[in-house]
Image (cartoon, rainbow, N blue to C red; front, side, top):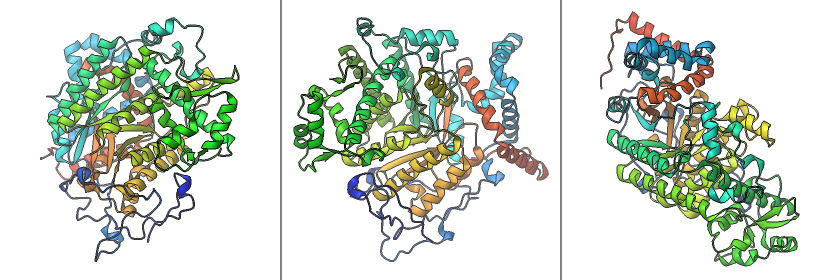
Length: 625
C-alpha cells in the first residue's frame, strides 16, 4: 500500500501540484535482520549524488529501474527496540547496573537540586583523586567518554564495532557562579564603538543584553555555554575545537565534531547581527502583507517589484529596487520571494541605499546598518576566519562539523554565519551541519528557506534536528522583557513541528539526493516515524543521507539496534578532565531528572537484560569485538 501525502508547495510556481511521491518508488530493502550482529558496509554516496532536478518536496523524483517492482512489507527493515540482548550486547553487566543506579539517582529531586553541594562535600571527604575515581565509576563514566583524545579511543572503537559512530564534544566549561556569568556577559555587551553612542540605541528589546539573563547556562539542559573574555580567548577555544577535530579524525572514519559559535566571537555581536537579520525579514513580511500576501508560508510570499518600488518610494526610499532585482537575473518574473530579498544583505557593501527599514517612532525609513560599525564588521570577519580554519581542518581529517544551536536572540546570526560556511564547504559533500530547534514556532520556515536556498545555489543542505535545550530560559526572558514567546505552546505541538520539518527534508532527499539530516532524538516514536518514512520513500541506510543521534549513556536500546541493522547512528560523546566537566555533568543530572521520570521503559529493559543474563548464566558476559 502506497502512502500519498499532499505538501504545501514552497513557492507559488508549484502551488496546486498534486503529490504522487511514491508511484514508482522502491521500498527500502535489506538482508539485515534486527538480530544481525554485523553492520553492512556503508557506501558513501556523497561524492556521487545525483544532480538536482526541478522537482520540489511533494513530487515523485525517483523511478524504478528496468525489471524492478515495488517492495512488499517483507522487504522493509523493521528494527525491534524491545530485544534487550541485541540492544545491550556492547555492555557488560556492571555497565548495565551502573546505568540503573545513575538513572535512579537522577530521578531524585533532592539529589539533583543539591548536586553541586553534594559533589563539593564528596571532594572534601574523599579527596580529589578518590573523588575523581568515584565519578569515573558512576556519573562521569556513564555520560563522559574520557579525559582526552587518547583515553576516549577505546570507547569510540567499541561503539563503532557495534555499529555506532561518534560526535565528539569537548565539554569543558568554566565553573563560575550566576553572578560571575552575568557580569561577564554585560562586560562584553558594549564595544568601544557602542560606548560612543549610548543613549542613541533604539534596538528591539529582544536583542538587548540583559543582566538578568546574562547567565546563559541558567535553566539550560544538555548544552554547554561560553562567555566572552577577549579575542585571544576565542583563539584558545578554536584551538580546543581543532584538537577535537583531530581526535575525531584519528578515532573513526566517518565522525562528527561539535562546535559552538559563541566560543568563536563576541556574543553581543551575534545579538546585533541577529537584530539586523530579523528586522530585514520582518520588513519583507510587512511589505508582503501590503500586497495581500499575509498568512502564507514564508516561501509562498512574493512581492511584485513594480508595487514594491512605488510603495517604498512613497515612504521616502531612494534606491532602485526594481532595477537591482531585475538586473541580477537573466530571466525576471517581475516578482521576488524572501530569498531574493535576503540577497540584498549578501551584497550590502554595494547597495546601502536599498537596505532601509521603517522607524515606527519617527514614521520614516532609516538605514538598516547605520549602527553596524566597522569594528563589528571586523568581529564578524574574525569569527568567519575561525570558522574557516575549523572547516578546512575538518575536510583534511575527514570529519564533519556540527554547529550547535543556541538561544533565539543569538540564533539568526549563528544560522546565517553557518550558512555562509555551507555555501563554501558543502559544494561537493556535506561538511557543515546546521542545527534546527523544532520547539521554535519558526522552525519550519527556517528549514524550508535554507533547503530552497541550497537547491538554488547547488550545495548540500545538512541539518541536525533537535527539539531544543533552552525552553525555560527562553520563556522567562520573553515574559520578562515583553516580546512574544518563541517556543511552541506544548510538547505535542513541538512533536508536530519536528515531524513536519523532518518530513520536508526527507522529501527533499528522496527527490534530489542532495540533502542530509541527523534525527537527534531520544523519542522512540520519532525514530519509528523516520524509519517508516524511509521505507515509504525508498531511502536506503547505506546512502548515508539520514543519520540518527543520541547522547552517550542514554537510550542505548535505540542507538545500538539501529546501528546493528545498518543505519548510520551516532552518540554525542562528551570528553574532558573530570573536575572541568563537572558543570556539564551537573546539567546532565538536571536533564535526566525529567527524562528519567518518564523513561520507565529504559529502566525496565535494563532490568530485563540483567535478569536474562542471571537466568542464563551470562552475568559475567563481556562484549567481544
